[in-house]
Image (cartoon, rainbow, N blue to C red; front, side):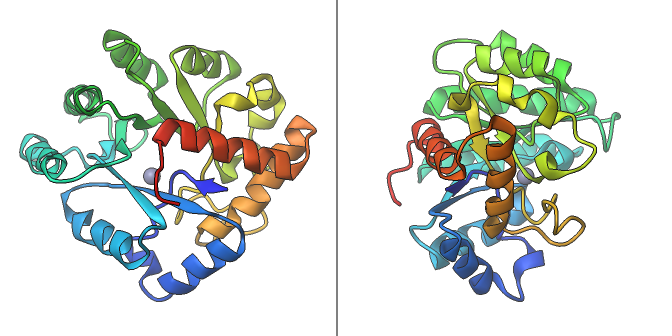
Length: 256
Ligand SMILES: [Zn+2]
């Protein structure tokens, strides 16, 4: 399995990060993708990459909830990171109208600029779209071409929206939400071809049942993959192999 979206570099893991990584490896999580959040998380991001090399791949970007009045200079700083190294994706980027609607215009601008980075470097986008599917989709449409690809992480939409996502060449990131009692995901997810599904935790957030409300971690891909297997009526091992293959294909991971 590959955890295609995890933030083990944040302070929530400072006390026991090594144990978290050991548990991930014991759970057969073979690789982690760490999307950046903003300028303040760069140092932690690189430190985690170095400590566990070559277990983690990094994505670089400015998270929509970190789009402040300084976003233009923040984008300049983050863009410079591409000058001297390779990232497996631009992320996480997108639009979040759940936490703050007042920054919508700036979020749209920051997102557009970062889509251009993905096209410039020919790498996928890790997209965070919360309460903002139409806004996110509309901007992506403007940039649509054969190079544009990525994943809608923590997908929260409908089957109809999922179909629009895969039709654009984007994957659906499924995490602990699929194990929650009140999710509608389980009603329609098996209509999405498995070729377009990626596993993720979004740790430290959104721990799956029975850990809901606690800190999440990559090893919890086990209950997530089991739940997806039951939704599709397939073997868990099949789900794990197939989604790992998908992640490999999208992110072109060379070291793992
Ligand atoms: Zn995230």
